[in-house]
Length: 186
Image 1 (tube, rainbow, N blue to C red):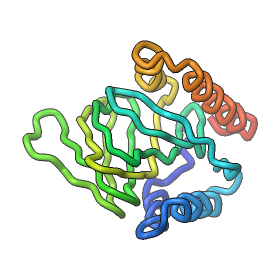
Image 2: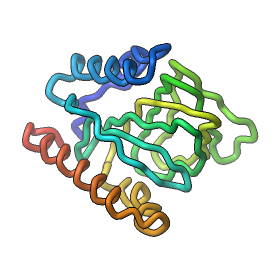
Image 3: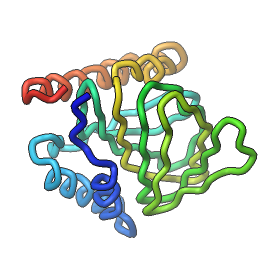
Image 4: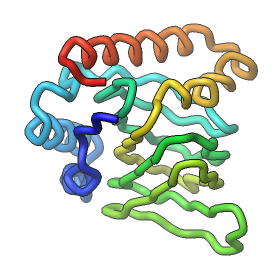
């Protein structure tokens, strides 16, 4: 599928934000990504938008979107919990502030992810997750990204009825994906 991002490099970029004030962390991570992947990271002003999916609510800013990969900064300043969704993609989350708890089907103990750690959700896997207080993470997914959109947008369309956020999410993903396609990136 034409993946250009290396999870180990992304982990190193996320670690640049550990132990920094949030705005500085966002800037440091974005700069590290842009340096590692020139021309593939949106370095313009951050456009935060709510994300309601699987019963959880957070906010995100899009850094890269294409048919085969996305990179976002995702988090919540007040905590949340929900269902991860089940996709034909891989999802990596690198926590750089706060804490996230996770468990997969069949597990009876939680895994705790703090600053500098990586949570991984394999293709066709599912987990429950909780941000008990606050957490911010760099999230990367690879695979057929459009297949994730129904889950990612269903709560917004059916539960919150926040059509403005729906439109901003679709527009942002579409704009960055077209930009990637024009560069020859699927």
